[in-house]
Length: 153
Length: 153
DNA sequence: TCATTTGGTTGCATATTGAAACCAAATAAG
DNA sequence: CTTATTTGGTTTCAATATGCAACCAAATGA
Figure (cartoon, rainbow over the protein chains, first blue to last red):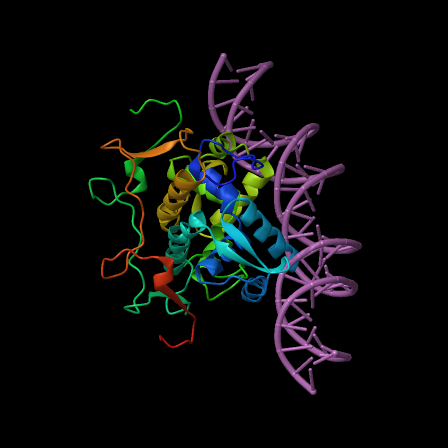
């Protein structure tokens, strides 16, 4: 599990809220986007994001502290690189769902945007979609939130 | 498309960044989580989130302005309800991916958390997973980001 | 009718952000 | 080897955002 200490959760029993506490911040999400795209150096993130250095520094520190990135120091302690941990790579689905929602809802028709393609085929990934265990497509109305200690209805 | 005016995008050509600008904020994400769970009233969100009223008010306003929620006024203009738009309901996949990542990475083994279940079966949804169009599982290393104006390699 | 709840707004103190200046170590150029 | 430049930050400071508490009018309930 990602660093259990230090974080005081907004809503400790809700996995959505824990994720939001850990990575639910604009710059954090964009750093993860870039990490998944292979970027590793402070300057690469800075150039790609256009974020203030102190903020980038802070977010990288938090991401390392929370177990999403590993800091790999270069010889003399400086000029380190930042590499995704397992939990970090596991954020691929989240970033992809941000991307796909944005493509569907945040661009005017015809407006250009960057695309993610599969190296082999050159085609974009299939649309992520929620399914029930029986294989049927799942809509929000067909689901129910069961809180801790609550019986399954 | 969601409100084109007003937002000045962090990275206009990147769908991930546009999504992050629109919904990449902790309280915003939790409001959407609650909306998908059927909550509609100011007081319901307030009670569920424990957020300051002015912040809740601000985020609801932004979500309406951005086309994620619709405000349905009650008779005399007050005590309105907030309903998800199509783009809002379309965030189900995103919230589910936050939930599933959190379940996998933000809880110690054995630690309890709320769960989302399918009404019919009482079982949680299948894990969301990225696939290429050819049906193969897709890892981040197998993908490539193609920026606007860049030729497909 | 009177009390309470709801759905906010306002004011204020504190925390976070972001721009800019600064700096030492690493690297590149000559 | 020596000097110039780049890198990877830290520090400072002003502007902005947050969150608590008080307040309020309209709606609802007793």
